[in-house]
Length: 111
Image 1: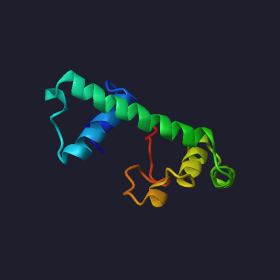
Image 2: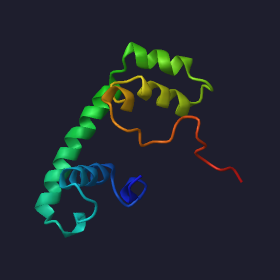
Image 3: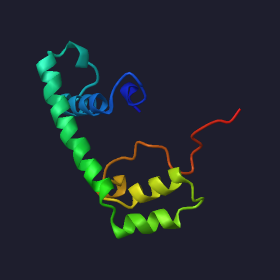
Image 4: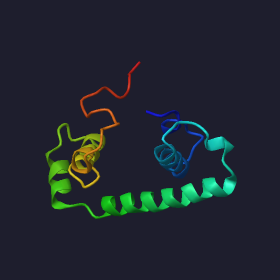
């Protein structure tokens, strides 16, 4: 994952804006040296993208609901991931590389 993906100082809008910038620029870095009005243009694109994703999640398909209902173990996290995997947002549907850990990967270490 990119450094901004896990940095709590960045809002979701900024993280998506930076990802859009890096994708379009074809390189990492340089965000901080861009003029504020250019950054704001990326933020506007990011808000539009986030809104589109939000709308998909607010209108679950039957496949998403079925996947959530079949999730095992039936924890909230596993159910949500199963629903997203069955949604149009799924990397498999969008034919993009998956960047999040699989459901089977340990996410937290208990002490």
